Length: 324
Length: 95
Image (cartoon, rainbow over all chains, first blue to last red):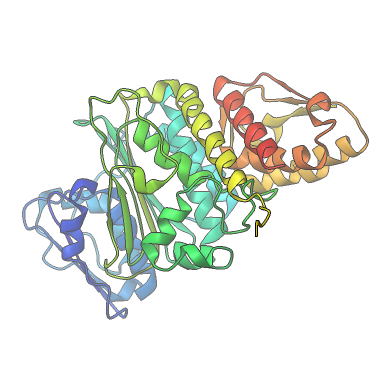
């Protein structure tokens, strides 16, 4: 397998990253890098780490690492996933970092500990913390519950001062969204991107066809997170199997965006032919100067559209008389 | 009875296993006995929808006649309040 870290691997340019991603030959992983400047989204680092777990430390190479900004890879803990030594000398306790290095979470207890420790690491004020805790909590839980893989969730995040944004990535080596949904929703899992879009639909869970979910699952998590990204005008992307769904930025002029039930109706891009990823990668950006301060108001917006969606699905499930 | 959530979940509710345990071991048995429960979120700053769903969806489904009279919430932040309202709404929609 091969991947390339460029100087602009943001979610906006994820297609560029994909063009150089090769996920065949799963015995080794080579990470090539831009010679002068490396700038990668934390989600790409979580992908690299999850692929490294698949092939084993001794089979991961990062050759010709010459970019001075490559020390970022060290700070983020990528060298913990390879036997190769870091060529950089860094101060790992640098308090100005405002990042969460690559972390593996395998149990709900580790999840709770991570959630409580992550906010101080990102130096976030309490009013900004709720949305970040919410998003990360839901995404990690999804992996622990649905990925069916013991290697757990790999998480990383980074604060970017220039854009005042937290970028978050979570990746796993699990069964993927399509297989997770296929038991109860065979008609909605014809390909990976169909399955991703169905998973983003309110009330869709991999554990039941009931619109209200089970006692433990509602099928609301991903819809909420997509909605948070949409209202705050941020990127949100899911990559699973050969499918990718990416929520694009909504028009700046629309102050009160309408939350749509069908992810097809959101401004998005999708791919059905991405290199096949065994597992799921979720990436989200959260701009801190957006309306994250009033998280309850943001949730109230989502509440209305979620209620509408469930009512609509309930009606769709009404049995009908036959007229002859 | 008074259920002090901070004791079980710390300052944030996201662990569904804990929610399920509280539901099965405390909330549902109380409702079975038609006892009043005050769920106190003092010092808890927030909770995910998944957590609140795991805590409340089953009690609403199993005891729709009495659950809203028997359970009372205390010291909820605005974030927690709205998540509880979301779960109570969609759960009743799907009854």
